[in-house]
Length: 451
Picture (cartoon, rainbow, N blue to C red):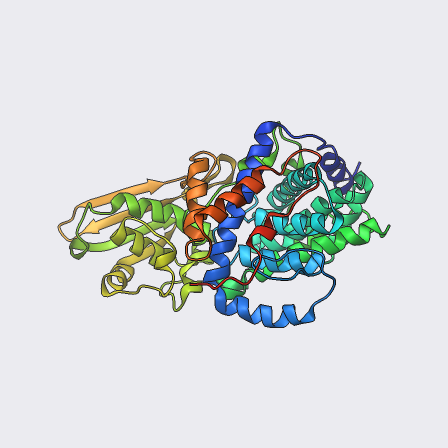
């Protein structure tokens, strides 16, 4: 049995979920809404430009879009909701996959489920299938996928959304394989946003969600993609990486959705260990006594988050220098640090003293390590350092459900009342069983004023 066929059979084999699986999915959904509130508000200039292009197109009123009064075609609703969810870099992700999962899967599944009138049980199985597909496929393509300049969130995300949405159509293993195969020719997403103008990054999960829905619709119509679409001589793996690791495609003893991380800081995950280290260093030394700050970090972090002086809120998300300086001075890092970039004299002075030093020892995929060592060199010769190998929010250093609820409240501040957020979280927790799925997106629809 070929790789594509075996993967589809494994995904189809996900037929039931434990209570632990369901609770994790509920937490992931709550976290998505937190990210969406932040992204809707924080990335407003880019969002508004996309809205001026998309919303006048109208179309069949099938699925709800975040904070909009009317519904849109399912694929377009999936696109817009994923776009909002990625605007502040606060959505869940996976280290082995080197990208984000929920930000495309949840919008795609919710939009199509609303159109089809799916059950809550169908929605949860579809999401579990999508997380499994994304993490396995993207992990198998790493690290070559990133080295070639592809953004796994968009490129592998399209395949995952196709697999997830195929489950909503109750397609069998062959149907899931066909949906993935069709999606392989519709994948896209580059890491060029890391070079300049990063505001466009949410297009990648947006197109993954939209194209994944479309691929599943085609598979439901009986259309088939190429055989061996993943492993063939002109297949997806050979297009996106120099070598793929087949072992990453094998079934584990648990669903991989439990290996996702959650984010506390509105910035690229590659900045988070540095932020945590800077928080630990806060207050231990006066800034004027610092001669130099050496940041030992794995090369991919420098490649993707190496902006020295962010010129706008979007660039703060990809600046190890800026996020570390703000965290060192304030003892924390949050949305308020983004907009506008708070480039005070103290921040600029610390950035000027900071050097990012490539250190392969700070990354170990097998052990789930993507760490940072921060060494502060003082004028008197003393050195103080902190090393963080696993940031807060990773499965090995987990957040509590309360932390995620607090994140939702913080991200929705100024946009939604606490009472409405309570209703939202209750609606998310009600997604279970064979009753008809009620899209929680409808609870936050309507053009609210962003303050």
